[in-house]
Length: 79
Image 1 (cartoon, one colour):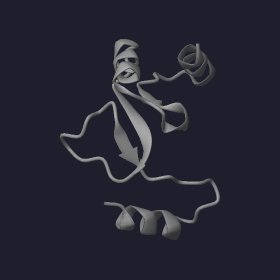
Image 2 (cartoon, one colour):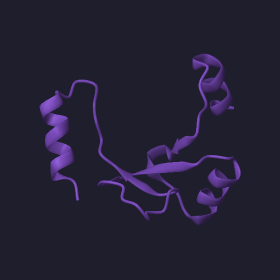
Image 3 (cartoon, one colour):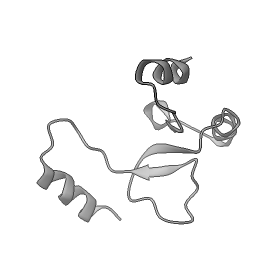
Image 4 (cartoon, helix red, strand yellow):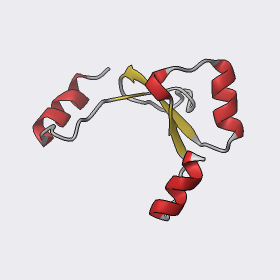
């Protein structure tokens, strides 16, 4: 129900998913795909690249208090 709630609350499509606590396996990936999500992120640190599994994308964590310089440094440091 969270996807529908987000759609209604913000009036936008919800096409991506983030695995809770980054926990997933092939069965969970299949469920996310079957639910109609186009992509999903894990808690693995890194940059997504063309050809990556769209249902297991790495990400760069950004916190609300991070400065632009800190975000840029994290992007540059990510593999």
